[in-house]
Amino acid sequence: MTTHKQELSSNLASAHRYIRAVAGDRAAGDWYFRIALETLAEESSRICAEGDVRSRVFRLVNDVVNACAPAAVRKGLRDEDIATGVPPIRGMECLPLPTRQLLLLVTEARFSVRRAAELFEMTEGEAELQLAWALAQLRANDSAEPDDHSDPDVTGEPATVRRTARTTCAAPSFHRELGAR
Image (cartoon, rainbow, N blue to C red; front, side, top):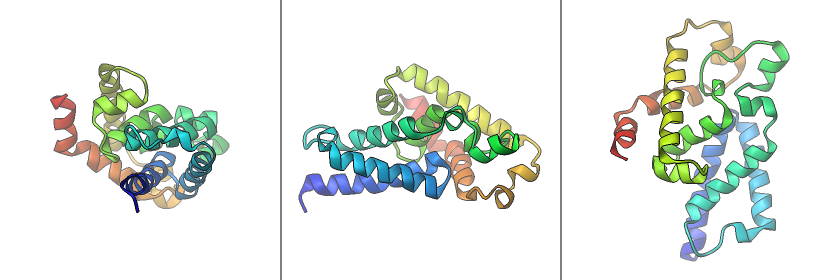
């Protein structure tokens, strides 16, 4: 396998994990990823041999999610919350989709704040403000009293999404990266 194909393969696997975390649901993440692969097959020029393959792969999966996610999901609501009228109380799903994407790019996909900001066509300062707001939201949600709707067994949401966000956002390395710009 050529170096470019190896790099593409590695980044697609990483993007698949990322898209599942963004979606907050394995089936939805797999669906978004399948659409990204179909798009890549039809528009291979989106990821050319020259340039940063990693950034292009993640831009592609973000473009797919942004184009396909329902409006309520982009605002930070899940389908079941809309159907039941129960707002999300805890976890990543309370964050608007662009903020969730930015946070997961930095924490899970290990993009620097600067590179993640470039993908979203914002300044590094704007990205840092969104990340700080997201962390504050997650901390506030963690300190809220749990109720039946926040129990992963009741909602069916994978506990690993919440646990990953909490532990990663609280990790000293994440705070060092924010402060190290």
